[in-house]
Image (tube, rainbow, N blue to C red; front, side, top):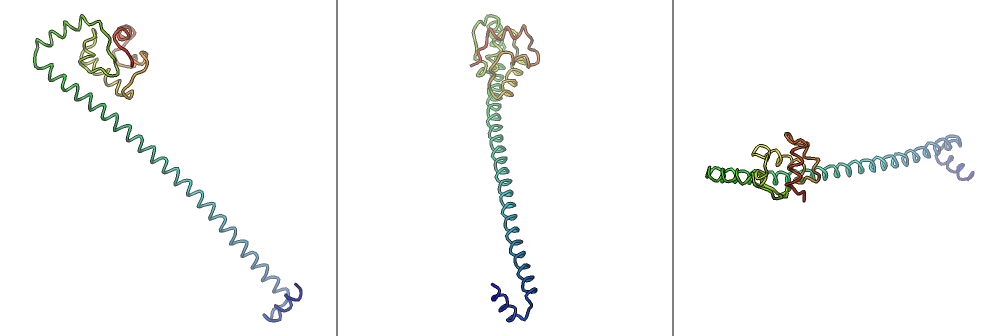
Amino acid sequence: MKNYLETLSQKLSLTRAEISLVSLLLGFLVIGGILKNFRSMEEESLLRKKAESANYREAEVDSLIQLAAISEKHVQEEVDRDAAAEESAEHGARRTAHRATEKKRFNGVIAFNKASSIELQKIPGIGPVMAKRLIAFRTAKGGKVSQFQEFLEVEGVGQQKLDLLKKHFTLE
């Protein structure tokens, strides 16, 4: 190695100390390049993770949009059902009077999660306003109510009306 440095110093017209210094500087240059490359690889990895998490967030947004579209579809179906029911109700006061007497005698059970406004109004104590509140409540719950205690959240439903609803509703 000593001969190699002496030969190199003679060819380059440099002293041994200068050759050692240049070698040291070249060594630092190589180490610096390696460290810079390592850091850039770490930054690339971090940026890739951020991009993946952004993609996951976009997927969550897409799924929320799909859920909103489904809810909108259910709301539209309810609105269409209510509009058809209102049209049929307007066709005859006689029919309304018959329904009112029918409502007083109703003793059956209705599947609440599928019931229309007209079906809900058959239950004594539930008129058009309460039926709309119950349907809006069901829609807000994603189209399905699973426990009777949840009905207490509806405006106008207290413990007495809840007992009545328990007699006439099933939560299938």
